[in-house]
Image 1 (cartoon, one colour):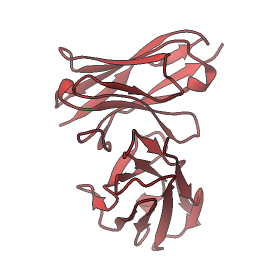
Image 2 (cartoon, rainbow over the protein chains, first blue to last red):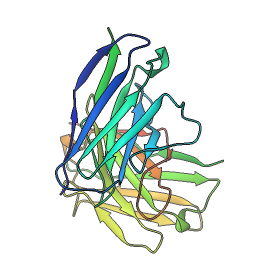
Image 3 (cartoon, rainbow over the protein chains, first blue to last red):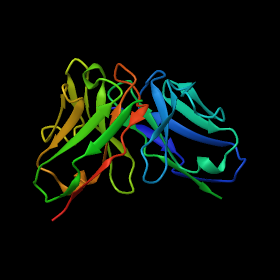
Amino acid sequence: DIQMTQSPATLSASVGDRVTIACRASQSISSWLAWYQQKPGKAPKLLIYKASSLESGVPSRFSGSGSGTEFTLTISSLQPDDFATYYCQQYNSYWTFGQGTKVEIK
Amino acid sequence: EVQLVETGGGLIQPGGSLRLSCAASGFTVSSNYMTWVRQAPGEGLEWVSAIYSGGSTYYADSVKGRFTISRDNSKDTLYLQMNSLRADDTAVYYCARDRGSGSYYPYWGQGTLVTVSS
């Protein structure tokens, strides 16, 4: 089974900050990686697929990069609506989510 | 517009059974890859089960042998039959549709809460 490890678990930041979340796969997953945003009581929302492709309707301040085993999600300028929990998900072999990164207000 | 609506959650005793339903609209369930994902209270997301358009089914080790995914093509409805429920099955269960070929999930339902407790 492929394990996904995100870091950090919690991130404290201010509006306007550049934020980076890391996701590491236990084996190579090529670019078969997605990122989701989840707010309390809501279903996850797809942000990025195939490691770096921006989902339609998602603001361009979100970007993804990486391949193989190392990936990052970057928010170029954090907005009030971005305080949430973020998950990576591999779909190279079955499906596995990272444990999540909570972005909170500093 | 793609819509997914889960129903069937509730309080159930350990060892009991429950069937979740996910009614789809805006697309044909049988032509798509469908999945169930769960989230225990305060925890992260866990993939549970998937069914491909061709009918192949897949399960997480944690539910294999206890849960069964199925669909009713005439009703465009996805199901998750859950047997031998345990306390650690307590979670919000989401159904989701992927974009094709067993990939990522642009479409999610609102979730239904299953609580396993005596």
